Image (cartoon, rainbow, N blue to C red):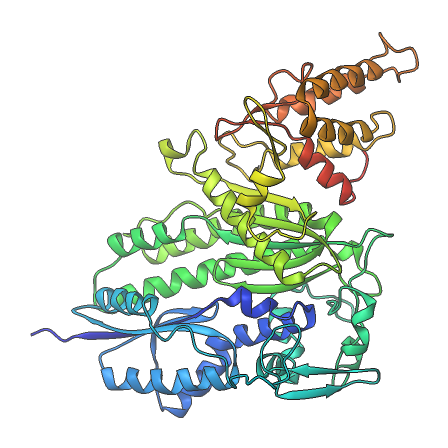
Length: 547
């Protein structure tokens, strides 16, 4: 006799849009805290009100959860009350949900997830609906329900923005506790900024958070560039499918495996994030760190960091994630000895460099697009199809135009020059971690940028080369030759004697340029001619330091 199993799957959708709506860091802090509380405190409160004792989860965290039961009515009651709670407490957040059934837990969960993905009610209308005379929040475009007055000026708030600024969420305590290193010897705790520039300070609600009201991201000199970083695990869908096929088949075992794996990934991301945050500590000013965590859920991690620290921060995070995920998976293998696990996990990241006054939300959209671009490109590496290993990689871009949502379009319109063949002004993405598989190495690019910043090399020539490449490639090659002559003490008596030119060629060779003496170009993984000069100039503009 068989007994059916039932599963209820819930997942917040469009989380990044919800986080950055309005374009203010302080609102993103509240939104992040709301998402962080979804599958923890709020869910616990709903379960307790339903007298739901010892629910069996296969996933819980990152704004999503899946629960399995033999009682369909129990899950229906949870679905009805939970969806009402989310709409009330987190207005403006879209979500998907589905109820599935099957002969075992695996089929029930799979069917619930499929129905959630096809949920016709996933796009809920914003309430209240706006009439022709309705005042709107000018930053979100949504109907305003609250007039917020400040010492100077006022602001119209929609329900979602008002909820994000509620004291329970605006402090950002949950995410703070997960990623912030602890201080010893009774020192005051580290602080995260809530503003990107001083002009926003008059809008901050000081009630209940006086100490945090005016914390502005500490910049370095006059460089007010910021980096929006988004990282995401590689091949997670395939790994979950493999675990489903090869995992334990005993009743109740599959949900436990999925939950343990999900928690292991979350722990790896959390520890890696703490390691990366630690490199910001020496740059703190009055205990204020030069960055701000935005999202930490599942295998996703989003962060704002001062631009000159972004590459080091991202590299530390990706390397730590590889290492920590390997340690977590080895522990899982001990608990499930018959289940094959990967040796470690990898991730890709996108970094969008933007000025503090540029649209914060759009920068994160570009960071997500850069991350997706990196994930697609690493699968074209020479060794991927032989061993299936996906390397960790980073793609970045400095925003210089008003249209910058999608990196594929930017690559075609801004980073490719016409010719036969055309040439890309970037080698994105760059490899990070133990396995590179033919990708240019991020550390080698950083060394080249530092070298180009020394007085003897004079990076202005590289900037002129980029300008010439867009006009006349033949002239650019000639200019490159004259630049090299100026660096060569054999041809120019005023040139600095030493290994300047040899070092320059060595850095280019490490990046894969076969003939650095002719021109710094190579064939990338798409088979397209490309040069690292555009990437070098972006890093120099962000504050790359000299050797």
